[in-house]
Amino acid sequence: MFTVIFGRAGCPFCTRAKELAERLSEERDDFSFRYIDIHEEGITKADMEKTIGKPVETVPQIFVDQTHIGGFTEFEQHAKNEGWIGA
Image: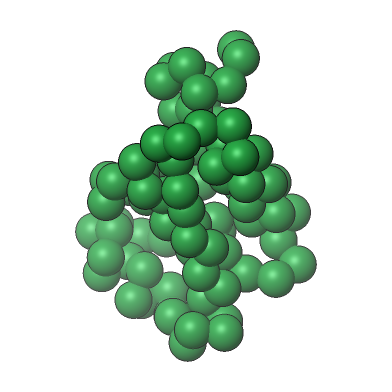
């Protein structure tokens, strides 16, 4: 599975999401990810809202296999539900 994390520098939840993704990519052969810094890439809140289809208030915004999961909390819960990490 391929995960995309949209985040920004200085965001603690973005850092936690990236760390979890790094851990998963080291532990699993079927997991890879890309971290996109929205400021470096010039991605606006409006761009994110268009992609997601609803208002975006926070980062990170995370997609797993092109399905919007949510932020870090939802990503961590998704990983637990899928058995990627311990509960």
